[in-house]
Length: 355
Ligand code: SF4
Image (tube, rainbow, N blue to C red; front, side, top):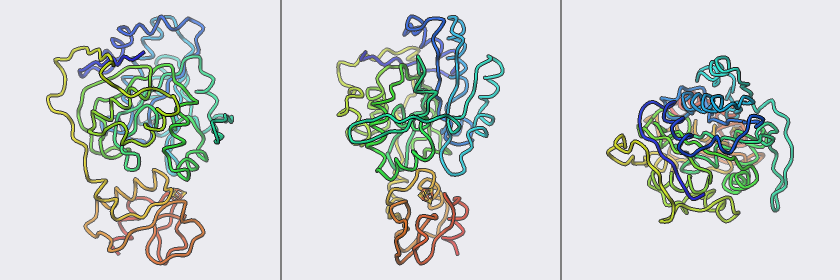
């Protein structure tokens, strides 16, 4: 299905329901269908900061499903590793309120049972709830990421794996396991929150208004379209390139049908991605760093005038190694000096840099 549905506007709940109606999602379901909805709640920040899925979109999905007599609905997500608390994010972002209002379960995948699935030369551990859904709806935010440049449908599926696996993905270089995950775990539907994603940082803080929600069925098609919106060529995004090679989907091309609704509400200027992360990365010597750790370091570097005179080491690849210089996080305890924490907070890193 080489189609992308896009609705522009400011009423996210109504826009979502209209998109689902237009794509006739109800015809794919029956009253016994077990639906799991996977938003992005990587951090405990409200959606207007540009990091998390607007609850109005998920509410629109639930309302649409219930209006079509689908009642076995679960919202499932796991926040990022380290200090990420899913329950805090659920509360802060209004997801427990949705659960109560509509009588749907809201579960933390960090507490889910995990099962193994083989893929080529890899074995992937997946959380059971999303894996066992009859109809999995992925609801990512289109936004930037300081290691993978962008995150959307494919990378959002990291919330469907245990924390130990999230760390392991970083030690495997992110691109390959993300692409493998998107090939093994295949949501039936993707609804993308592109209302105001932060085009620089995964954890938000610099939202860019786009007033857009997108719907589709192929994660590679949607992500490649999103990459182009952000100013990247799809083949510049490592996990996207690999996912296409693995058969998870196809890149957007001239044959892709773009079906727009309310096009008069389209943003007048195309958002421009920031070069901040690229510039700050020149201060970093990274080897398999977890996202939370790396993002805190980038955030710290962006918020201090005391830039280091040598590269800062960070990541699991430095574990057990003795080295000169400064490092960030427990993994680099073999450095002459390092900031403790797993991950260390941005504030601790700033204090360290400013000492
Ligand atoms: S200290 Fe190491 S394991 Fe802990 S978050 Fe940072 S990179 Fe990951």
